[in-house]
Image 1 (cartoon, rainbow, N blue to C red):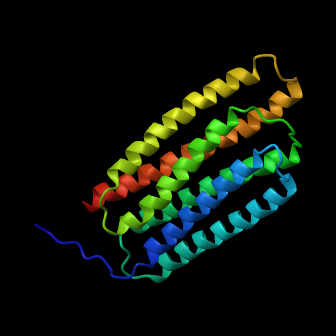
Image 2: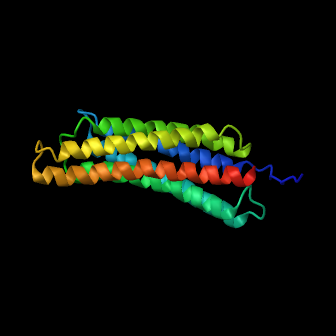
Image 3: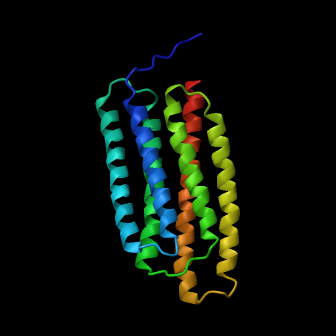
Length: 205
Protein backbone atom coordinates (compact mmCIF):
# COMPACT_ATOMS: atom_id res chain seq x y z
CA UNK A 1 0.00 0.00 0.00
CA UNK A 2 1.26 3.48 -0.79
CA UNK A 3 0.10 6.90 0.34
CA UNK A 4 0.17 9.95 -1.87
CA UNK A 5 0.88 13.21 -0.13
CA UNK A 6 -1.74 15.84 -0.94
CA UNK A 7 -0.97 19.45 -0.06
CA UNK A 8 -3.48 21.02 2.33
CA UNK A 9 -3.53 24.19 0.19
CA UNK A 10 -6.94 24.31 -1.50
CA UNK A 11 -6.20 27.20 -3.84
CA UNK A 12 -5.95 25.04 -6.98
CA UNK A 13 -9.36 23.53 -6.32
CA UNK A 14 -10.76 26.98 -5.57
CA UNK A 15 -9.41 28.30 -8.87
CA UNK A 16 -10.83 25.42 -10.88
CA UNK A 17 -14.18 25.96 -9.16
CA UNK A 18 -13.96 29.66 -9.96
CA UNK A 19 -13.15 28.88 -13.59
CA UNK A 20 -16.15 26.56 -13.90
CA UNK A 21 -18.31 29.26 -12.33
CA UNK A 22 -17.39 31.54 -15.21
CA UNK A 23 -18.72 28.87 -17.58
CA UNK A 24 -22.06 28.87 -15.79
CA UNK A 25 -22.18 32.65 -16.23
CA UNK A 26 -21.20 32.38 -19.88
CA UNK A 27 -23.82 29.74 -20.65
CA UNK A 28 -26.45 31.92 -18.98
CA UNK A 29 -25.46 34.90 -21.12
CA UNK A 30 -25.55 32.73 -24.21
CA UNK A 31 -29.10 31.66 -23.36
CA UNK A 32 -29.99 35.31 -22.87
CA UNK A 33 -28.49 36.18 -26.27
CA UNK A 34 -30.95 33.78 -27.93
CA UNK A 35 -33.96 35.51 -26.39
CA UNK A 36 -36.26 37.36 -28.77
CA UNK A 37 -36.03 40.60 -26.80
CA UNK A 38 -32.29 40.36 -26.13
CA UNK A 39 -30.18 43.50 -26.31
CA UNK A 40 -27.33 41.96 -28.29
CA UNK A 41 -24.89 44.80 -27.64
CA UNK A 42 -25.45 44.64 -23.90
CA UNK A 43 -25.20 40.85 -23.70
CA UNK A 44 -22.04 40.88 -25.83
CA UNK A 45 -20.51 43.50 -23.54
CA UNK A 46 -21.23 41.40 -20.46
CA UNK A 47 -19.94 38.27 -22.18
CA UNK A 48 -16.66 40.04 -22.98
CA UNK A 49 -16.36 40.97 -19.31
CA UNK A 50 -17.09 37.36 -18.29
CA UNK A 51 -14.53 36.04 -20.79
CA UNK A 52 -11.94 38.49 -19.44
CA UNK A 53 -12.65 37.30 -15.88
CA UNK A 54 -12.22 33.69 -17.06
CA UNK A 55 -8.87 34.60 -18.63
CA UNK A 56 -7.74 36.14 -15.36
CA UNK A 57 -8.61 32.94 -13.50
CA UNK A 58 -6.69 30.87 -16.05
CA UNK A 59 -3.67 33.13 -15.64
CA UNK A 60 -3.92 32.69 -11.88
CA UNK A 61 -3.88 28.91 -12.31
CA UNK A 62 -0.76 29.06 -14.48
CA UNK A 63 0.93 31.47 -12.08
CA UNK A 64 0.06 29.22 -9.14
CA UNK A 65 1.52 26.16 -10.87
CA UNK A 66 4.73 28.00 -11.68
CA UNK A 67 5.17 29.18 -8.10
CA UNK A 68 4.20 25.96 -6.29
CA UNK A 69 6.76 23.30 -5.43
CA UNK A 70 4.29 20.50 -4.63
CA UNK A 71 1.11 20.49 -6.72
CA UNK A 72 -2.01 18.43 -5.86
CA UNK A 73 -1.64 16.43 -9.10
CA UNK A 74 0.55 16.43 -12.21
CA UNK A 75 1.45 19.87 -13.50
CA UNK A 76 0.60 18.94 -17.08
CA UNK A 77 -2.87 17.87 -15.97
CA UNK A 78 -3.35 21.18 -14.17
CA UNK A 79 -2.29 23.10 -17.27
CA UNK A 80 -4.56 20.97 -19.48
CA UNK A 81 -7.59 21.32 -17.23
CA UNK A 82 -7.18 25.07 -16.84
CA UNK A 83 -6.65 25.55 -20.57
CA UNK A 84 -9.61 23.36 -21.51
CA UNK A 85 -11.96 25.23 -19.17
CA UNK A 86 -10.81 28.49 -20.75
CA UNK A 87 -11.32 27.11 -24.26
CA UNK A 88 -14.98 26.41 -23.52
CA UNK A 89 -15.46 30.01 -22.42
CA UNK A 90 -13.77 31.22 -25.59
CA UNK A 91 -16.17 29.14 -27.71
CA UNK A 92 -19.22 30.55 -25.94
CA UNK A 93 -17.87 34.07 -26.30
CA UNK A 94 -17.38 33.37 -30.01
CA UNK A 95 -21.04 32.38 -30.41
CA UNK A 96 -22.23 35.61 -28.81
CA UNK A 97 -19.81 37.67 -30.90
CA UNK A 98 -20.92 35.94 -34.11
CA UNK A 99 -24.59 36.66 -33.39
CA UNK A 100 -23.65 40.31 -32.80
CA UNK A 101 -21.32 40.97 -35.74
CA UNK A 102 -23.34 38.90 -38.23
CA UNK A 103 -26.40 40.92 -37.18
CA UNK A 104 -28.50 37.78 -36.96
CA UNK A 105 -32.05 38.75 -36.11
CA UNK A 106 -33.85 35.41 -36.32
CA UNK A 107 -32.29 32.25 -34.87
CA UNK A 108 -33.64 28.72 -35.35
CA UNK A 109 -35.54 27.63 -32.25
CA UNK A 110 -33.50 24.42 -32.23
CA UNK A 111 -30.44 26.38 -31.08
CA UNK A 112 -32.09 26.66 -27.67
CA UNK A 113 -31.78 22.88 -27.31
CA UNK A 114 -28.01 23.16 -27.76
CA UNK A 115 -27.76 26.00 -25.28
CA UNK A 116 -29.71 23.93 -22.75
CA UNK A 117 -27.13 21.16 -23.20
CA UNK A 118 -24.37 23.72 -22.68
CA UNK A 119 -25.99 25.07 -19.54
CA UNK A 120 -26.34 21.60 -18.06
CA UNK A 121 -22.71 20.80 -18.90
CA UNK A 122 -21.63 24.03 -17.20
CA UNK A 123 -23.66 23.28 -14.08
CA UNK A 124 -22.28 19.74 -13.81
CA UNK A 125 -18.72 20.96 -14.32
CA UNK A 126 -19.13 23.59 -11.61
CA UNK A 127 -20.42 20.89 -9.25
CA UNK A 128 -17.54 18.55 -10.13
CA UNK A 129 -14.58 20.88 -9.65
CA UNK A 130 -14.68 20.98 -5.81
CA UNK A 131 -14.74 17.16 -5.81
CA UNK A 132 -11.23 17.10 -7.29
CA UNK A 133 -9.88 17.55 -3.78
CA UNK A 134 -11.28 14.21 -2.62
CA UNK A 135 -11.41 12.52 -6.06
CA UNK A 136 -14.73 11.01 -5.04
CA UNK A 137 -18.10 10.89 -6.81
CA UNK A 138 -16.62 12.08 -10.09
CA UNK A 139 -17.48 9.12 -12.29
CA UNK A 140 -21.10 10.21 -12.61
CA UNK A 141 -19.84 13.55 -13.87
CA UNK A 142 -17.86 12.33 -16.86
CA UNK A 143 -20.50 9.72 -17.75
CA UNK A 144 -23.24 12.36 -17.81
CA UNK A 145 -21.10 14.82 -19.77
CA UNK A 146 -20.49 12.10 -22.36
CA UNK A 147 -24.24 11.49 -22.60
CA UNK A 148 -24.90 15.21 -23.02
CA UNK A 149 -22.20 15.46 -25.70
CA UNK A 150 -23.93 12.66 -27.62
CA UNK A 151 -27.21 14.54 -27.30
CA UNK A 152 -25.43 17.65 -28.57
CA UNK A 153 -24.23 15.72 -31.62
CA UNK A 154 -27.81 14.68 -32.40
CA UNK A 155 -29.04 18.26 -31.97
CA UNK A 156 -26.20 19.44 -34.21
CA UNK A 157 -27.23 17.12 -37.04
CA UNK A 158 -30.89 18.15 -36.77
CA UNK A 159 -30.00 21.85 -36.85
CA UNK A 160 -27.79 21.41 -39.92
CA UNK A 161 -30.59 19.53 -41.65
CA UNK A 162 -32.92 22.44 -40.96
CA UNK A 163 -30.38 24.97 -42.25
CA UNK A 164 -30.02 23.10 -45.54
CA UNK A 165 -33.77 22.48 -45.93
CA UNK A 166 -34.26 25.51 -48.18
CA UNK A 167 -36.02 27.48 -45.46
CA UNK A 168 -33.12 29.95 -45.16
CA UNK A 169 -31.39 32.18 -47.70
CA UNK A 170 -27.84 31.23 -48.70
CA UNK A 171 -26.20 34.10 -46.76
CA UNK A 172 -28.23 33.27 -43.66
CA UNK A 173 -27.16 29.65 -43.92
CA UNK A 174 -23.48 30.67 -43.96
CA UNK A 175 -23.88 32.88 -40.89
CA UNK A 176 -25.96 30.39 -38.94
CA UNK A 177 -23.66 27.49 -39.78
CA UNK A 178 -20.73 29.34 -38.16
CA UNK A 179 -22.81 29.87 -35.02
CA UNK A 180 -23.94 26.23 -34.96
CA UNK A 181 -20.34 24.99 -35.32
CA UNK A 182 -19.14 27.23 -32.49
CA UNK A 183 -21.89 25.85 -30.25
CA UNK A 184 -20.76 22.35 -31.12
CA UNK A 185 -17.15 23.31 -30.30
CA UNK A 186 -18.26 24.49 -26.84
CA UNK A 187 -20.05 21.21 -26.12
CA UNK A 188 -17.05 19.22 -27.37
CA UNK A 189 -14.93 21.36 -25.06
CA UNK A 190 -16.92 20.22 -22.05
CA UNK A 191 -16.27 16.63 -23.04
CA UNK A 192 -12.52 17.37 -23.17
CA UNK A 193 -12.73 18.82 -19.65
CA UNK A 194 -14.53 15.70 -18.43
CA UNK A 195 -11.97 13.45 -20.09
CA UNK A 196 -9.14 15.29 -18.32
CA UNK A 197 -10.96 14.96 -15.00
CA UNK A 198 -11.31 11.24 -15.62
CA UNK A 199 -7.60 10.92 -16.44
CA UNK A 200 -6.66 12.78 -13.26
CA UNK A 201 -9.00 10.64 -11.14
CA UNK A 202 -7.60 7.41 -12.59
CA UNK A 203 -4.01 8.51 -11.96
CA UNK A 204 -4.77 9.55 -8.40
CA UNK A 205 -6.80 6.49 -7.46
